[in-house]
Picture 1 (cartoon, rainbow, N blue to C red):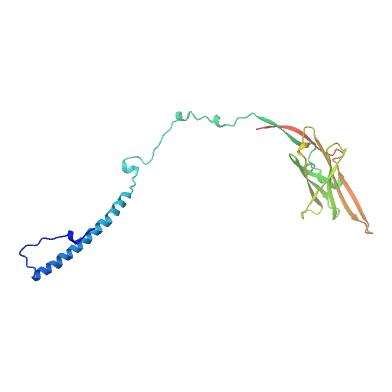
Picture 2 (cartoon, helix red, strand yellow):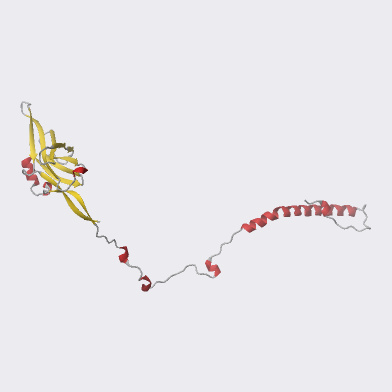
Length: 241
């Protein structure tokens, strides 16, 4: 704390306290003391903060201002790179595994040059198949003989001791009104997959028509690969990994 008692000024003994000069001096000196008093207060109050702020200031210096290089360049010769051997990064593996696959024992009919002529004669033909492990899919091409029609494949896995029928799905298309297409998807159980397992199937195309007397009649057309059926056999294939 500060008070006016701390600020004094000397006066001579012969000074006349009653003269006008005395009163003027008192006023001037008192104003001076007031100003000095507030200067002391403000200097003591804000000086610590200014000092603390100055202490928190950080400076940034760049390498070039200190006589250092801004970048470091390392030059390597061919000899320095001798330790790098590309062969260390080659994947060298002679490991092989055997995996079971369904292998077709027939040529894809749709790839034959006489496919259209055989279709006109037979009315129905297996066009193409595709196998993906336990799934067998394919397309069947038929002549458009009736609006009421269906197609299915008849399958056996025990050399025709028993069989089952799998309905095919009609594939809509406006590109060809003379022929039409059906598709099928057969999923086999994993437990059936063993070496020597065989699957056989034939394709059937059924239509329903009416005569001039509106009598209904059904006709069935078969594609059994000229009596050989379409056969698949489960075989092992060696795969490199």
